[in-house]
Length: 209
Image (cartoon, rainbow, N blue to C red; front, side, top):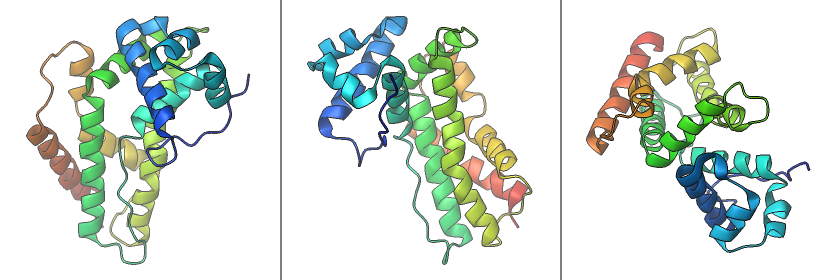
């Protein structure tokens, strides 16, 4: 079954849909591979028919669930006509801070561990879904901001994808791999803020025009 088109964001989802996706996230954390339409319907106290209507099938539900988690990383809107270095820096730093906050949370850690275990297995699609809606999805959202910075004469790069990958590395560093390998202590808000600030500073040092 082809999933219906559904824009996943805090503004476009109904409260009931958010509850369902939160229930699916909870099941992924608790049960890993045990996520089923029946299990989500039971935990969210809704019918399977409603799930199929909203998300199409299990892969559609998985995709929406991953997109819902990723949507918690907010992109600060900017005006291309008045964009300056300070505004661009604030937007990049806020994006990095939100990204690290979501990435180091229990749900994202569990989701990424499960996705890694699925990678390369034909009949298990979570790895591909997380890749498409996680790192690749983040690039789709961030690259227009980088392009706007280049158009405004604030950044200098040849390839937006390579610039984003550099920003990704500066923001995430080894934090994600340490969490995936079992580091129990989650970074504090102060540490996350400091890491995002340094990423912004270092990115401008590399790509500032």
